Amino acid sequence: MGFWQEAFEAVKENDPAARYNLEILLTSPGIKALAAHKISHFLWCHHFKLLGRMHSQFWRFLTQIEIHPGAVIENGVFIDHGSGLVIGETAIVESGAKLYHGVTLGGTGKDTGKRHPSIRRGALISAHAQLLGPIEIGENARVGASAVVTKDVPEAVTVVGVPAKIVRVHGPASPERDRVKLESERHVSFYDHMGGI
Ligand SMILES: CC(C)(COP(=O)(O)OP(=O)(O)OC[C@H]1O[C@@H](n2cnc3c(N)ncnc32)[C@H](O)[C@@H]1OP(=O)(O)O)[C@@H](O)C(=O)NCCC(=O)NCCS
Image (cartoon, rainbow, N blue to C red; front, top):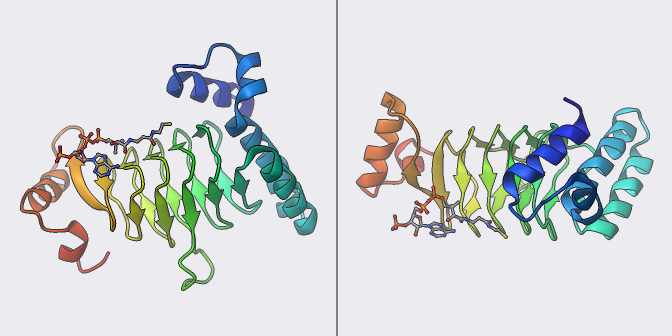
């Protein structure tokens, strides 16, 4: 499937208010920002870095969504509302990820090179969550609204709070998930226990 088809499907799947493609195209800032990013990213990757940045800033002005042209964003990502969303230069966002308004995929200021988060397939990043540093958010993980995440999040868990902690493990049982569940039931932070993975 191409960009547009996956983009429309993602909106219809995730936004109960969405009705038909033309309406989505005319009213969704997320889909416009993602389409514009395709062009800025192309410019960035073909040595027109300043033009890429200017293009992305122009679309930031129109959509209130700031995506650095260097960011790698797969087709089929869903951005709802979007105002205040910031995606940094070395962020990766995989297909099926869902991002709401006020989310930051940012740097801590301490890292060089890859310094922004990677969001794996199907992960949900709720409104105003702040994800900082070159961390991994695992497949189908959920990050609660206003959480602050500075450590890796395993797949298929829910994290909430400041700093974010695992509060729920989803899906079928597996030894890894059982271990995580046990830890969270004992009110021990997974991250503290693993010595800051
Ligand atoms: C994280 C979220 C997706 C729920 O995920 P979930 O896996 O279904 O988690 P649950 O609802 O079972 O919540 C698990 C626990 O975390 C708590 N919790 C959920 N979200 C929380 C948040 N953002 N901050 C603090 N605690 C939260 C719940 O109260 C619950 O606590 P309990 O076990 O003591 O009852 C949801 O709560 C959330 O934050 N949604 C926001 C989505 C969004 O951005 N919408 C904007 C649309 S405009």
